[in-house]
Every structure is written in structure tokens, then in C-alpha cells.
Length: 99
Image 1 (tube, helix red, strand yellow):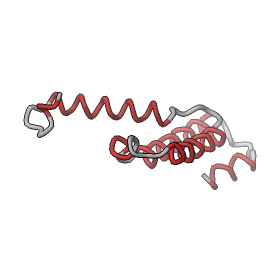
Image 2 (tube, rainbow, N blue to C red; image 1 turned 120 degrees about the vertical axis):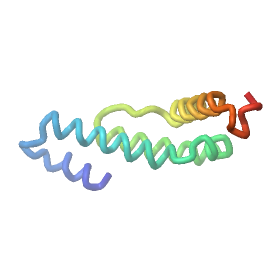
Image 3 (tube, rainbow, N blue to C red; image 1 turned 180 degrees about the vertical axis):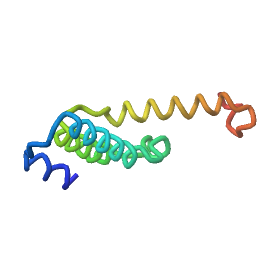
Image 4 (cartoon, rainbow, N blue to C red; image 1 turned 90 degrees about the vertical axis):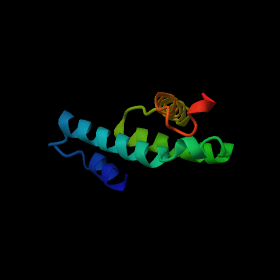
């Protein structure tokens, strides 16, 4: 995030739409990857304060890239639905009978 802020501050002439899209995709993927690792496990047990702190990180990333990112709740719902779909599709999964 530090380097992205420095690039934005520099306002270099070669800072075009292509670089903007590269920065957007790199920040989006890094924030999504770090925040959503095992989100289906920890999100339900996280306190409101923990969720607010993480949402603050997401908001700062939004400010750096100048675009909106999905909220933690949206990421959790999408990941939980995806995981549930994979479990129901696999009859050999131990939790298959729970659905």
C-alpha cells in the first residue's frame, strides 16, 4: 500500500489508464487475498471491533485505488455460498449430509 500511495503522490506523466488498472487489480487481489483467507472460519467469531478494523483497511485500499471494493460481509457471504456449493456437489465430503 505504501508504494501505491507514493506512485499516486508522484503523479507521473506515464500514469495512464493502463497503470491505473494494474494498480487496481493488484490492490484488489492483495486485499481480497489477505482479508478473506479463511474468512468462512473466522468471520462468524470476529467481534464488531475486529470487523470495523478490517473494514478500515478495505476503505484505505479504496482510497488508494480510487474505486470501491466489496465489504467484508459481502465477501463472507460469497465465500460461504461457494464453500457450501462445493460441499453439496461432493457426495464424498464429510459434511455433505449436513446440507
